[in-house]
Image (cartoon, rainbow, N blue to C red; front, top):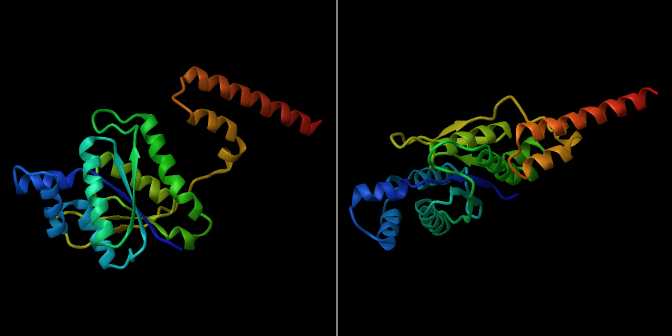
Length: 225
């Protein structure tokens, strides 16, 4: 089964290049990246280390999870090119449209991040063995994004990897001894589907919950009778 590495992406490549040279276009940044991937970006440093440690093999898939800012998209495109040519990986860029890198993180952004990661992981949740086929590399990217991605990954039973720029070894965060309880979602799937379609006010949610409580009470009464 193909292994998937979800990798959070930021703009460390552009930041590091600006420290290396004041001016330069895409071709210059690409050359800088390919010549020194360890120093060029947090993402390529960690991905190359995962490849060396055989956590990633040729032909595996990397999903670059990034925001919609121009710099993040530019970085992701160059990282995709590097991973395909140098690391021999299949690469997909997945953009978080609701994620704002400035100010407060919205509930909508967190919901989008959760849906994307769980959507990728869900087919592999049938057993502990298949769960090992999905990993999260939370080294690069906006810190709030990497933090929440790590928490979601650990709750899904995935290994999360991180490497600090000043250290050569990659750190493995094992899954938490906790798991998602899907029973409520299954029992009240219509409510959660309604909840996920947009931001709801407290009064709207209270009204829906009151209706659910009433239906549950009626069903319980019918069962007793």
